Length: 352
Image (tube, rainbow, N blue to C red; front, side, top):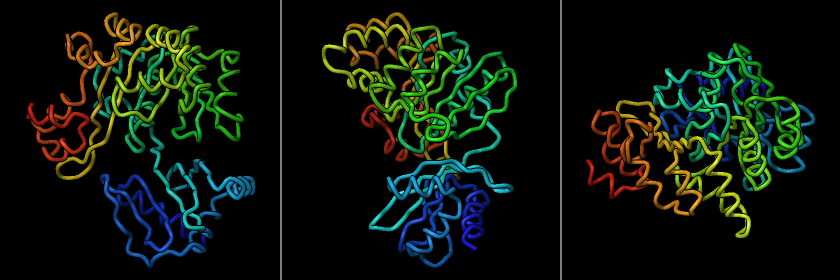
């Protein structure tokens, strides 16, 4: 009964075109639709009911891991329902869960109405491409679409290391080796240590979460591989600061030089509610050129934002403020919503 109950709840996410399902003690099941949480018309759940439903989806190994660490990330595909990323955690002594839907059909960059520059940067042979933003900003979807573009147009070996594997790619022009941390490899760091021996052309690091992972990704990007990674940062310039600040002061000059030499682009995005329903991605795009590389090398990160505004018709760069202004002008996003989500609300107010 518990298995069928959780499957029905996950099915309701699909039916309501939602993105997430939350199961938390003393609350009705909640679905996120268009960025907002809505309660399902059901009785409130207690901890035992949630535990029964959640455990129905786990293997014995996963149950043991959750009971030892009180945290669990995994992905699951349910026949005739869909694919989901799940996180189990504990709150006030009881189990709680968050599920996110993962499209089985991987979107193209055209499907996402992505800027044309993204098609150009994925043609690069080597370097580091970062997709950043807060949790729930569509980073995984954007990266999957970029890999899909490569899969359609190139013949490469693509190695992904994720926790967990979200989008499952079918081999088209490329061949994929998708590794799940915990079942296919012990850790991001361990996987990246041996990745170069697996003859990849492209490496995707699901999350650049610490110094070891960031260092390995930079080394791979420097040694002739195209590396994709994600970070939880809110703007393109702050992403560069985050990478450099992970390292100690005496290491930072060398790291700045490595970033300046290997960084291809930063796509920093967030999802905003659209007028009339649904959400739209606002993408700030930094593409490294000689001027940007020099600013990184010389520790003048604060000047990058101004540099991004120069010659945009040639560079393909765009700031978040410019994108939000266009959304407001086009009637896609309400003015107050754009200002609420903006990193530079005063600048945006002056523009609109």
